Amino acid sequence: MPTPGFRVPPGCAESGLVEFVRPLIPSMSSTVRFELAKGERLLWSGVPRQGVLFRPSDALMIPFSLLWAGFAVFWELSVIRDGAPFFFALWGIPFILVGAYITVGRFFGDARRRSNTAYGLTNERIIISSGIFRPALKSLTLRTLSDLTLNQRSDGSGTITFGPTSPFTALNGGLDWPGMPRPPAFEFIPNAKQVYDMIREAQREASQPAA
Image 1 (spheres, rainbow, N blue to C red):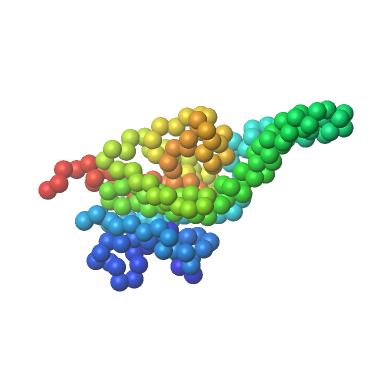
Image 2 (cartoon, rainbow, N blue to C red):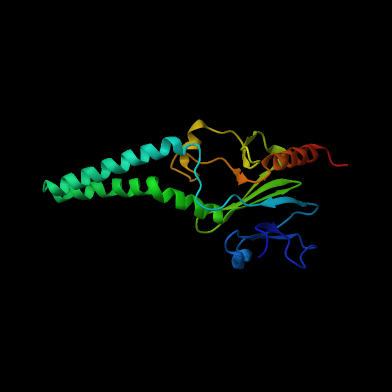
């Protein structure tokens, strides 16, 4: 099985073509392809940790989601038991669906997104390919990249966030919510400090004037 991440396909070294190897679906590795610019080199690639994961924000989100779901179910059962108008029964259904998502569904949505995610670092840019159903490609130019934040765990893994962060983005559970977009990041990668140092070094080289 090929190593997950970005790679140069066999026989394409001169063309600059790079493809995304899916962590869990290697047979679909050709779904996302792009070309490196002239002189651009792939320095590192990787994928986030796979499977269902808990985040620090879940210490708050899990109790909140249980309260939400519990109240929504209680409302719906009370309406049905008391024979209230049909409209009130319909009114509670969206709240039950939201409760089911934030209680259980968001964990599987986050895991699905990470199974479709790959990260790349070149001597010119940051590359993130990610999406729940179909990966979309995002590039960040190293020359214009400002904030760079490293959150490292005791096992050496961690998350590198690019750009300014908000305390509210930690509550999104790894998914985009209306009005709370996630900043681009290399999430749950091994050897996070080593990758962080590689990015800083690539930034320094990219900022130097061309000879």
